[in-house]
Length: 289
Ligand SMILES: NC(=O)c1ccc[n+]([C@@H]2O[C@H](COP(=O)([O-])OP(=O)(O)OC[C@H]3O[C@@H](n4cnc5c(N)ncnc54)[C@H](OP(=O)(O)O)[C@@H]3O)[C@@H](O)[C@H]2O)c1
Image 1 (cartoon, rainbow, N blue to C red):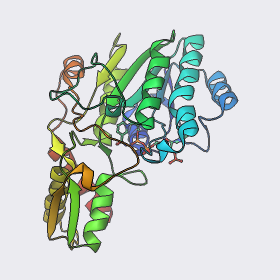
Image 2 (image 1 turned 120 degrees about the horizontal axis):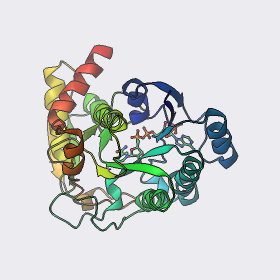
Image 3 (image 1 turned 60 degrees about the vertical axis):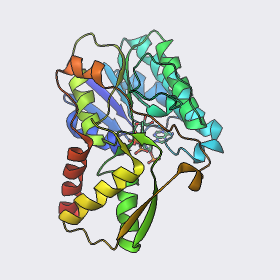
Image 4 (image 1 turned 45 degrees about the vertical axis):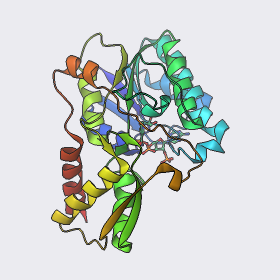
């Protein structure tokens, strides 16, 4: 019987994985398994003896990471190294999620899995260190890089923040010179579940929803779709601004589009377009309000 350990089960992607992963799944949140605690990680894995570990936990506060480097490193780099070592010991496979922020955004065509990484900030650097630790381990593994994640669950994300602000304000200024592919957490969880059913696909994969948008395009789409669904919005105008007009502690890649060609070939389908997934996510949110 296949036994799966899901770590970070209460995050945006983790919550979705709870329903997409099949078989005997033990889903643990931070209160049950804290990735800063090496002994706890080893104890849990030793007593459960899973065949598969899916790590959906991460330190994801991109700006805060600039001043919390040790904590980000502990969760994003050291913990994956420990997970990989434990997997190697018991012959389990590790599926780990990584990010578009391992790239510097200087390309202008979609990033391929083999492209050179060059993270611009602490978050990206620690995520890349986690990837390297796993790649250098003896563990069977899959690393799935994704980007611009939003979902129904989780504390906050761009969609939820935009909806909250649009209820309070008539005008919003949103960055237009960073482009990527907004990606629904449920689509990532579906892709991971599909990968677990494939044989011999150990590697690194990029997975995002199809299509490209700037944060400005994404915000405009959120308001258009939300309005159609009857969300109470005060917003009248979205003003496109440059990154330089909205300074943040962490530098972000200007272009972070990932090519999902490799994973599409393996799974035999293309990821849904970001706008379609956004519409579906908002429909779900609207029924829960
Ligand atoms: N969010 C994005 O835009 C984005 C973009 C590209 C890639 N990714 C990657 O996608 C993956 C999933 O991200 P997400 O958006 O689902 O993130 P999320 O919603 O922030 O979830 C991360 C989860 O990790 C947990 N966690 C944090 N520190 C932990 C610790 N010490 N021990 C155990 N659990 C801990 C968090 O728990 P608490 O809630 O208690 O802190 C949270 O439930 C991550 O690998 C992330 O790097 C995300």
